[in-house]
Structure formats: structure tokens, C-alpha cells
Image (cartoon, rainbow, N blue to C red; front, top):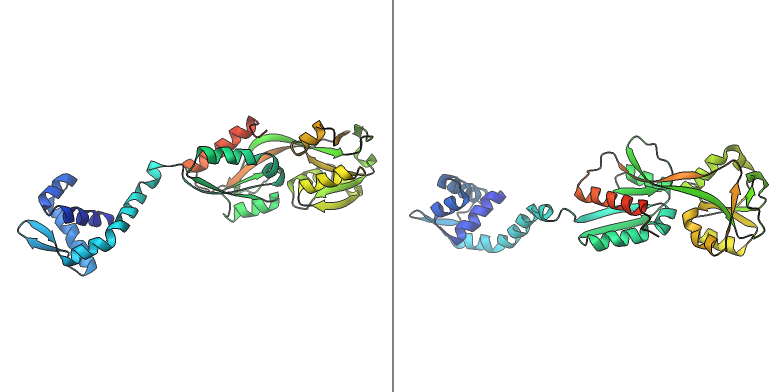
Length: 294
């Protein structure tokens, strides 16, 4: 049975005059009669008594209407659901640790406050995990702090970033060569965008690093640094702005090496670009570019 057939049925249940229903819906009387006959054949029951030129709802028709009308209204409303509100739905989003912890929280809040019919499933994963989930179709968006060159993934730059070297040692030199920093390195885990960029930029110099610990969270790394002046790490400047300002951590500028990078938003090349998708993407880009996360 079709929604059109059901619509004719419910209208005739209120007004048995076929001619009036046909005129109201701007179709022929025969089209209305054929639709009702088709519905009855599919159900194997006659729903109307044919009395003169009128179709009078019978006992089986009344029962059918009682059992189906609420469901019909729900289905009929769903036809116009996204016409009425194109910015409604559920988005699965994941951001790598720096972005998730220091950039996205307030942006998520502002988006949900503005678009109240949208739900966000927000995750914090490392870059490798995000790329894997995008390829499997498990995420609508990923926000990563490393490069991604997979042909099935589209990436768009959202902001420039820089890794810096920091320690809590007040006496540490302001500038140094990497191989002269004789401290214990506390780094993120393998698969982290921060770690990958740091190691790749160092090249063979990374072989001589004293990597003492590997951790999943920047907050854990900062706690160790703050209590142990013999440690050092590579971290996004965004993640330590407060500690640098309060002179709890100090930057060591590397001579001849920089760790400039990009934060990117990524999604599968076959992702449907509907209104919600585009609105969320542009909202994030605008907020980050304007540094509204601070």
C-alpha cells in the first residue's frame, strides 16, 4: 500500500463524497476509486460500503482506520521532517588530543547551543585511530594534527600550529641544538600526530633521544614536567599557553629545526554533503580561524 492510497482512504473516511475529494485533490474521481480499490485488494478486505455515489466506511474500515491512522500521521510527518528542519540529526566527530582538549570544547558547546536539534557524539582519539574510523565510515568528521594522504579522505586546513620544546627547568637555555638537550624526553604514544611530526622532522637525530616515558594524555605529561625539572617534551603551543604565561614551563627554541604544522578537518570523499554536514564544517572552520576557542 502507498501513502497516496492511505491518504485517499482517510479523507474518504471523513467525507464519503468521492467527487468532492477528487476536486479537493485536483484529480479525477476514477483515480480516487482506483486507489481505494487497490488498497482493498492489498488488504483482502472491503473498507467501504458502496451506497449510491458515496463510499461509506464500514466496520472493517473503521477498525483499519483506528489501528493505522496514528502511524500514518507519523510517517506522513516524516516526509517533511528535513524540509522543515534541515539542521537536525546526529553527527559522529572525533578530534586528536590537542584539538579535543584545548580547542573544541567551547566550539562544540556553541554549536549545540545554536542548533538545538543536533546531537554530537564527541570522541578524543589519536590521529591514526581517527583516520581508520573515517575510512570505515564510523565517523562523519575527524580533526587531526598531522598529515593525511589517503586518496579516500578529503582534508581541509583549519589553522596553523607549532610544536615547541618545553621544560620546567628555569635554568634551561632559551636556545639549543636538539642533541645538546640532556634531559629525559616524555612523549606521546606511537600513532599520535604530535609524536609522528616530532620524530619525522628530527629524522636520524631522533635515534639519540632519551625517550624515558610515553603517555596518552598531555595533562599527564605536563604533570610530570612540572614536578621534574630534568624532563622535557614536544607539545603544541596551544596546550601550554597558560603554563608559559605563568612561568611554570619554559620554552627551549631549537636551532635549525622548527615543528610548524597544520590542523586539518578530514572526512571520507564519499560522505554526503547535506546541509547539516556543511554547516557544522564551516562553523568549526570559522570559529577556529577566529580563535573563538580561547
